[in-house]
Amino acid sequence: MLGAIEAGGTKFVCAVSDEDLNIIERVSFPTTTPEETLEKVFHFFDTYEDLKAIGIGSFGPIDINKHSKKYGYVTSTPKLAWKNFDFLGEMKKHYPLPMGWTTDVNAACLGEYEVGSAANNDSCIYLTVGTGIGGGAIMNGRFVEGFGHPEMGHILVKPHQKDDFEGWCPYHRNCLEGLAAGPSVEKRYGIKAQEIDADHEIWQILAYYLAQALVDYTLILRPEKIILGGGVMSQIQMLDLVKKEFTTLLANYVEIPDIHSYIVRPSLGNNAGIMGGLLLARKSL
Amino acid sequence: MLGAIEAGGTKFVCAVSDEDLNIIERVSFPTTTPEETLEKVFHFFDTYEDLKAIGIGSFGPIDINKHSKKYGYVTSTPKLAWKNFDFLGEMKKHYPLPMGWTTDVNAACLGEYEVGSAANNDSCIYLTVGTGIGGGAIMNGRFVEGFGHPEMGHILVKPHQKDDFEGWCPYHRNCLEGLAAGPSVEKRYGIKAQEIDADHEIWQILAYYLAQALVDYTLILRPEKIILGGGVMSQIQMLDLVKKEFTTLLANYVEIPDIHSYIVRPSLGNNAGIMGGLLLARKSL
Image (cartoon, rainbow over all chains, first blue to last red; front, side):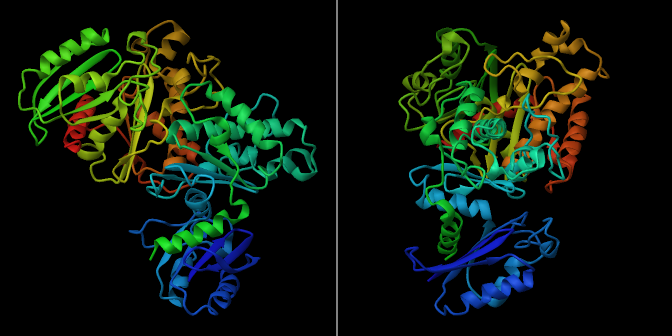
């Protein structure tokens, strides 16, 4: 039996599955303090005595460097109660089991890579565009990571000529996340993104920023597939707008797979993260 | 005995070494037509009967996909005589030996990774900034590549507020290469880059563009080291300007190694590419 935690900044999902990844039970609860939240995690997993391993995909930034003293910690998150919290360490104190540990977006990327949209590919990127923008990448079966894990939502983009919004990222102001994550829409217009018409020019503007990022990811990593999830991308018009802007900006400079099989939605939907967690658990055995 | 070719767009370098990579002989000649150029390549290597393998780092774009019918070809290069030329195939016709095949910048990256500036690291990026801008990356001992090889010199950057140059990249106009490669300086001012004072604001402007790219590479790949070579970077003032702009733009968002060990010059200098070729040859055995 395998366990998984999809530890998001606003909610936690926990699940257990059999060794073929058939989910037996899953629960979900809001992310509050580490103590309160982990109590619920323990409460859930304690009922499964034959758990063999647990995979954790966590919001970040987190420390994934095995040589680091803070390996397994949530590090410089703006969620202050979690800052420098030894998440993996606390889990290991409770369960003396093999554990997988990576970011929430890497876990979702792994889910899609193994059993989702990229199941037939050797490489892919998973990008979520919601209240923040985060991405993970796998090349030849391994996460792309070095000194730390990617933070590809914060790359720099050039302004759209019709957009005078200055951006809201507290670190970079007008990086990709500062200009194109969901909250940027409300900060521009004072109304929630969901309440804005599908033909409003804001969607064109967001698509322009996201397409720039996809061009940069394409030229740097040359993945076989890019998977776009998250609340902003669930706006039905967005995928086509992003593909169109991407095609214009790339200008046929490098060969890519057919655009409709290159830029796609997650086939696991909201299950990508938890499936990735289970796969991480299985890999840790 | 190992052989290597550093096949640049303007000149070819060929070398042979012993198995410990001590160079025995090297020659260099201008890149003309494929027939004429390869005749000189054959003339050089034909004299070494106990050659065991050859490593080739070629200007591109090239096809590096082993499943492709055009694996080993130079593909969509603006050098028309080389377009769709089966470089590796011609080499193999002449020498029935194991051969390594990658881009010129990947080869230089490999040289620096194995025996140069990044010899103690698990990951690095090599970027050359000269008449064009090209980059290669290695993570955990493998080249970063998927559907094709990176073309990281063409990522998109935002304009410097004092720069009204519209860029000269024939594909993207104002991508990184279009705004920051050597020829952009001459196109802006009508005089060659080498003739412009070190305290001219153009260096600040180029450093701003290059630093943006380095921020994006950092956030997407999280390498342990970034190595900057090429003619523009050999301007003595450039390295410090790039580091300064990079520090400002990254805004401490992610942890990096000490800046002076993170952004560095190639310790192999102009030998990075040919050393990488020899290493490729040895790996192919």
